[in-house]
Length: 358
Image 1 (tube, helix red, strand yellow):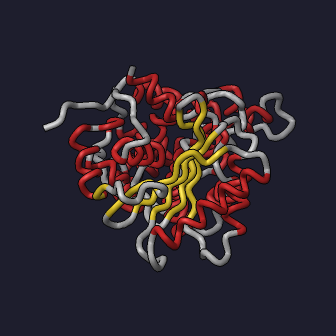
Image 2: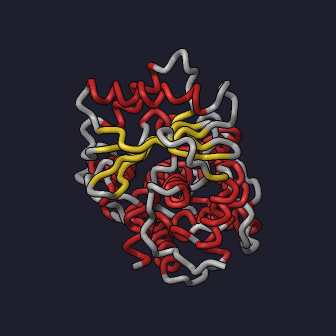
């Protein structure tokens, strides 16, 4: 039996520490993926995940890694190759990909590749020491037993499983209150006030009345309300109000930077976490309410994107587009790549979690 080591620093040169850092950062255990994690002053910084490429056509992936790493303030990177055995010969076939990335970054004066891991279906090891392999299942079990980085068996689910569980949390009945909430037809200021109060109640662990949940849910049917709520959760009520006033509003530029993670400083992560908690209740309580559900999934796409967990966010975005293919935000976030809040360690959700748990 292990002691609880949730607050213990991870040793990323060991299999347990490395894999725990990955699951903690990305929110799940990847498959068929190439992972890049920046390192600065001995700490992991930005991160990137892409599907493993066709090994005969690696140019696009090399460009993505180069764009994500060169000039981002980290002197080194760590690479992880997660193989579901689609590639013949496993690690031997994939090792040249790591060499190509190292050569590409050297050519552009990018960070040095100081560590590279191969994680297969059964075994994992560093590419330069394949003889020192560890069994993946045993490593995962040890991580959960020791609760490294606060991880448990619940942390090891896939992005699709995480989205499925998100929609099945305990929630009160409030679907029959939606028509009454629509009839109230609250204006922008009233909507923001209700949301502001609800976010504050969640951060204080206070319950939200079913009638209030209905008001929050109905507000999401309008795209401007949706965008304003995102900005509000990120920590700026005046900027949220500017969403309704258009590009001439004094706070409009600030609102857009908050919506796109371009503020150059950390958002209100407590507010964003509270927003996710409210959305889980809305989705679970309504089961399927068309536009409300689609917009809720869209906002969750944004929430996970701001945290640098694009694969999980993408699952939410796909769910939104299945319901309403006309929604644009998921496609825009996909094109934007890694959120800048996630790319800068001091501003990231992961760093916020560390500070919160100290």
